[in-house]
Length: 446
Ligand code: PLP
Image 1: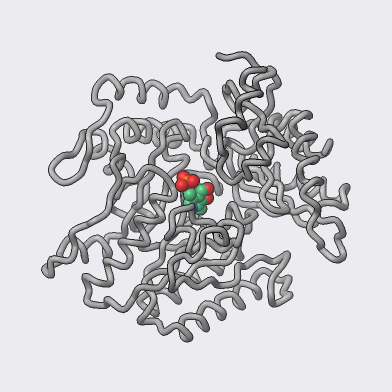
Image 2 (image 1 turned 135 degrees about the horizontal axis):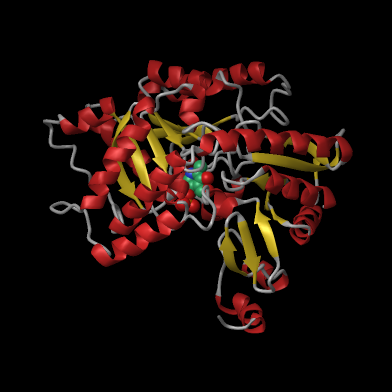
């Protein structure tokens, strides 16, 4: 490894970081991470902390996870790459599809389309949704609905359905025909409604209004995260996603569950859709499918949707979409090992127990720190605290305050993430009760 001074001096000279102004990297040099094991990361100066971000919501099993590392190494020897475009397949993607089929059977999803990450999965589902309607002779269904505050990756389709101006404005005009519904965000909403169940009903009514306004026959799909993640960890009332599913079904609109964060145990259930008892038409996955050790994803497809493609007699079902790395055998091998380990460790139990501990601890911090306006969580290991400068007016805290809290937490033993006015926590699902206490006391210090 190059020495610390070389790394620090050269980072901003030639790297543009995602989601960062280039000048910001110059003025506030990033922490350079050079090692990790278990649930801890280590920086170039040797400072070690609990990773309360879990990579980027994706290192569910921690950094050591030897079975996934071994599977990657073995696959690199056996078959490092071959494409699965028309005419070829590979043993690992077939084996993985069978495992995914079992894993997603309770969600009613039986086919896999492989991708190389979350944005690719979203793009795939958006495209296949339009194609589904075209095959069925319903070609006027081209629009998309989504939630304000939703995050669906960075491709033009995903950015178009994103519900946060920060990810859109610089790249507009985006895809036409994308319409956004109010999110069931109890702390701030246009209805000034503080009761989660009544708010869910108001948001569902807004969805119905928008469908009536656009015309149901013009809408291809609604995409949503079962729990809004990057938008600030916003768990809806349990009636919300089933309500969305029922409205979509009634109007012939496909439901795409964006489970890039929530699949594979993060919410304390195996999938976010299962947490709410919903069977979507498509489920987008990526991130924890390989524990982040290989860029990989899969869109899972419902049986009824799959049949429309498979039984097509119109000649419109050829999938003119796919990625060079769709079905990468090394990614598939990593995913197979990761899913086996995820099930063996039964991570949902620990995610639920540690999630409750973290959420309760954050509420205790809120009682002591007036800076914490809202604490959200309660479903596995995805939590957030929203910082304000004044609890009465709910004025969001300054960026400098959030940066200070993050920096102090880091110096005190935990890496946390700042997103808008929120401190977001999404640690590995295998962390211990003692690790949770480290995170809480690091936040307390901030
Ligand atoms: N969808 C959701 C819900 C996400 O949280 C993300 C990334 O955080 C994406 C899609 C995009 O995934 P990727 O960054 O792997 O392209």
